[in-house]
Image (cartoon, rainbow, N blue to C red; front, top):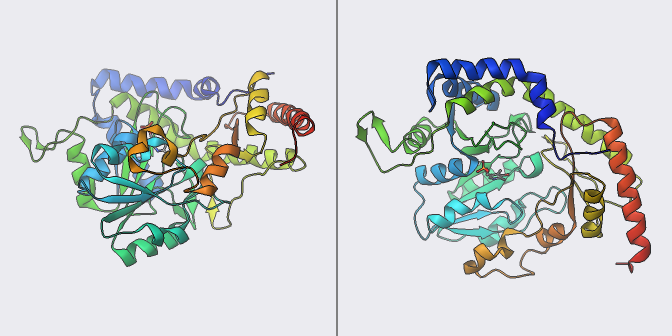
Length: 375
Ligand SMILES: *Cc1c(COP(=O)(O)O)cnc(C)c1O
């Protein structure tokens, strides 16, 4: 048996005709950059996220960069975020000479801990970027309250959380603005690079729209220096068709996660926790084990697409050395980085595949608990 990390082949087969028709519309229109397909997707995705504006761009990283530029972040500013995220959350800040400032995370949700924000805020702080890690929305209300008190922007990196909810509010609508990635492996994935910025603020949306297109205010007038980060027509065409299936696919991910919860309940691992006020979309199904490194190897040897998100927290990455963080600064994030293990979860995963994952996992855990000293 083989259990991939995700199965894009099966997914494509289930929607092949719609995708091909949508791509052919772009071929006949020749609107390869932005164009009608992208606009349709932007409108549909804004509705889906319950916001007034969605601006299609060329990646999740571009969405973050353009948002930070549009908000006018300047060298010397500081932005508070979590060390347990993909580097793209902070990369654009570093290119802008804005300092990423980390706080530790909540040991149960793995998201930014609102209680730790006050230790990190300074006169230079301009924003808090919450990350909806593994598809679970950040604890938005206390973060927003903190941001309002300190006059900061609350921004949401929702790259992993298309369709997730916090108290009936959609991911991407929780802060001043949200950013999405549609990298092929995300819950809503393009067939190439793509991303979006979501917001209710018309002026902010307008600035992002201009920045993605060379700062254009009209065909020949450039209001400010911008970027070339426009969404491609083919990606808009793919995304608008896939968006129709997203809720269904997310439901199937949750069903698969529930099955894992049952199958793994008697194994010595920690299972994901979902607070009552949130609906996750299980971009990853993440368990924790002190034998993580040995276990992940056993799973991979048994053709199970297990992964680690993320083995090195950002404050300990070589790329962030200049900020002077060291081991011990964020103990919760560091412990998680040593223990987290992502099991395969995708809409088409079968009961048999999940039972196989359980069996291999049980064997691996048994083997290493016997041969390793306790602790
Ligand atoms: C995927 C991801 C990004 C980056 O998106 P790209 O489209 O790959 O540029 C940013 N933040 C998080 C949390 C992500 O998971």
